[in-house]
Amino acid sequence: MLVLFETAAGYAIFKVLDESKLQKVDSLYKEFESPEKANKVVKLKHFEKFQDTTEALAAATAIVEGKIGKSLKKVLKKVVAKEAHEQLAISDAKLGGVIKEKLDLNCVHSPAVAELMRCIRSQMEGLITGLPPKEISAMSLGLAHSLSRYKLKFSPDKVDTMIVQAISLLDDLDKELNNYIMRCREWYGWHFPELGKIVTDNLAYCKTVRKIGDRTNVAGSDLSDVLPEEIEAEVKLAAEISMGTEVSEHDIENIRHLCDQVIEISDYRTQLYDYLKNRMMAIAPNLTVMVGELVGARLISHAGSLLNLAKHPASTVQILGAEKALFRALKTRKDTPKYGLIYHASLVGQTAAKNKGKISRMLAAKAALAIRYDALGEDTNAEMGVENRAKLEARLRQLEERGIRRISGTGKAMAKADKYQHKSEVRIYDPSGDSTIPSTSKKRKFEEVEEEEAAADEPQTPPVKSKKPKKEPEPEPEEEAAEETPKKKKKKKKDKKAEEAAAEEEMEEEVVAVTESTEKKKKKKKKKVKEEEEGDD
Image (cartoon, rainbow, N blue to C red):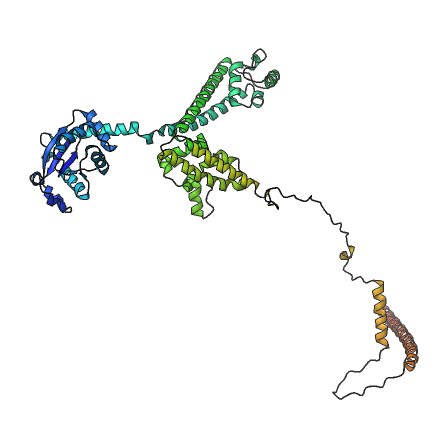
């Protein structure tokens, strides 16, 4: 068996002397405890040294990518092809497949081979003769630096670092522009405060201030290339009656310099936005179609890279950027957020408030597919993104039309809604509830009087004391009953008159008694007064 061993200095091919020892994988390291023991297991057959670091880097990158370099192919044809009947042990299974396909050599890769490679690496200085240890370490260090630099330069995963830097710079420029414009408006507002209300656009405001300078120059300056005619006329009229303070020429120069800075930064921001748009369409076209350039760039920046973003599930993409709200909701056991950075996408923005959660969830699911297609796919077209966006827009229209469209008899046409007619019920105020005195009608009073008279005419039966059976009175003829009723009424009237006369007599007796008692009291007082007068005499 032959062993292909790659080093920083070159390719080494060893011949296994005792293959029986490879069967004991767990104890193989004991055979490589010293260079003497190692030489009894394997023996160096050929060593192909690299000429310089460039050749070493080319060979290393070819092995990393699973390809056969020129130097490796030369060594295999020179040494191994002569002994084609023997197996070739290699450390990379992918490289073994390529060697077998192109050179028709029988390659072996197994756990025993991997353990043998480890053991050879531990005694590499004793097995490979003619290379001092310092030279091996220097070549290893140089190859490591060159390989890292090559990966950083040509790695497709690192191209999106430009997007991360561009979106960060764009956000910083927006903050600086807002600060500069606010300072410019406040500064020039002391001299010409009316201009700030007339010209609302920030860039047009700075261009106007830079052109006119002092407000006394407004009448003679032409602002047609900066402002429309109507606004220009308002500015000239306001400058004549302005209430601002007077400023010196030195102050105007500094304000103009600030306006120049604002205009330059605005122009650079426009250029940077165009650059970012082009880079996003080149690197992540499907994501750009789904959520837009700015939102897509912010998602990539938040995740670190496009590949890291592709590893996130759709639920994480949905709330990416709302981590604080998520952990606060989990801590306080409240509702978790429905969207993060994806809220600023155009599809979510044009949705009604009640459907924003549904659309953001569906958009995150489709955006996750687009991200993986852009990061891991070989095609660079945006067909999948356009198709998914059309599906989302159709779903959005369906959600918005729900409740408006009803299922009719045919299932196609709109159901006819009846015209709404307002029916108002007129209620009359009932004043009977205001009084607490029970009110009864005259008819009810007459009925109660007749019932009372009927009850008085009926004979009153005395209370029954014993349970002896009563003898039912024989029914009298109707004529006798009719004769008795007027007699009873006459007796009742006589009794009432007698009671009234007795009551009058009692009242007269009481009055007489009261008058007698008062006369007696007066007589007693007179007697007392006379006795007192006699005693004084």
